[in-house]
Length: 75
Image 1 (cartoon, one colour):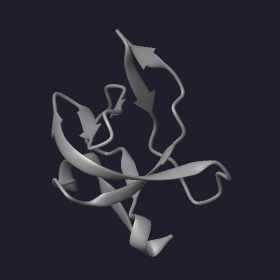
Image 2 (spheres, rainbow, N blue to C red):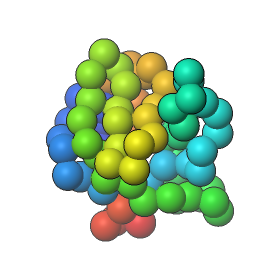
Image 3 (cartoon, rainbow, N blue to C red):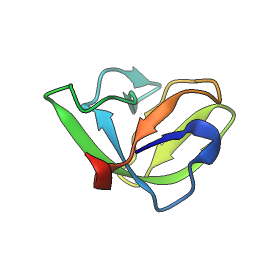
Image 4 (cartoon, one colour):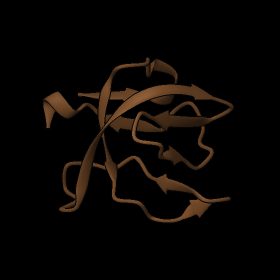
């Protein structure tokens, strides 16, 4: 099952990439699909201004509301 950025809530576990960059020292990750071999389950801490922050200190790059995340429980 997939959720768009606008549907994400704190506590939801989604699948992301491994760290693929940084933004002023904060590690960046990307939403990913189940076809990607190196994927990581992360718990959403919150979202704001087109970015998602995770409980492990990572965040996403800015995205639009239609960007989808695969729920960890459905993978």
